[in-house]
Length: 374
Image 1 (cartoon, rainbow, N blue to C red):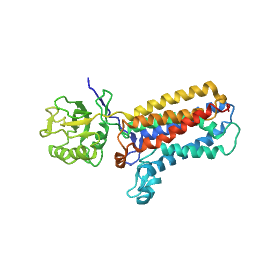
Image 2 (image 1 turned 180 degrees about the vertical axis):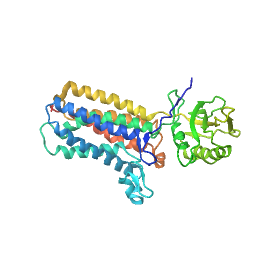
Image 3 (image 1 turned 30 degrees about the vertical axis):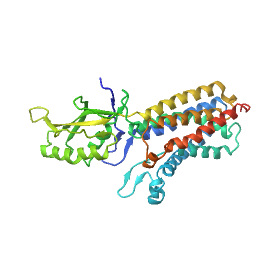
Image 4 (image 1 turned 180 degrees about the horizontal axis):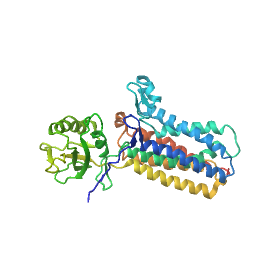
């Protein structure tokens, strides 16, 4: 039995023909978060006797605030140089020349939090009965916890926000990053690769935490020639492993030349490239956070269903801040830093930004016990 998990799921659900646009799991989970949250908010407002029409307005506020806040937060906290080097990339989800739909490559949860707080403050200024700033926040954070779980699941499909190397049996090797690279037009322009398979290889000695020996089998179509295969392996596979994907793989030391085997002794079968590699098993930090958010969602929904309008204003919001960002501080110790400058800090940016939010949560929680119910 393998002492690690091979994750080879594609981040894309499907592509639209030869276009550069593809429907990705991350985008689906992101939108599902809003769609499911809207239905839950309808239920909450109905139970509390509030106008369900306000849910539609709140949904618009939340979508705009989350996307803008998360995007601007990432740029300001992690890549501020983008503001003057390529400001259009901050707001455009595509590249102009050549045109390529990229989505927003970089969203920060702390930025989303600031955006949501700002949007709900603006919404609460309408002074609607039973919808003060903290009362609205107490209902919205239930949904934010659920949406956070779905977004972190999308991060897992994208093989991003990766954890540190681990020898734990639930450590994940994100082999899908290599599969996607081999499936690209740049590598397989002749469309001669049939499929790829990964198998544990116990003949390679490992020397570092998280190193796991794997044999990569690349199955080629019968039309592929030995020369084409040699070119793909030497000019693409090796550089990809050594440079582009060195966060996920390492080149095994002191290995002989890569082996090629013929699958079957007939013309209907193609060559098989057998390549020994070292994967890096990492903490599935995205799933840790997703599971934590699921428990938080369930707990907050239970508290609301028990007390409803008798909840002291700010109670659920304070618990959300303490739980969500307190766990964020813990999980960051198991994650790789996102940008290089964090390596020089005693705590990374995610932890630094979480500390004041946890403190704010503690203060609001204490104050909520001194308030009358809303």
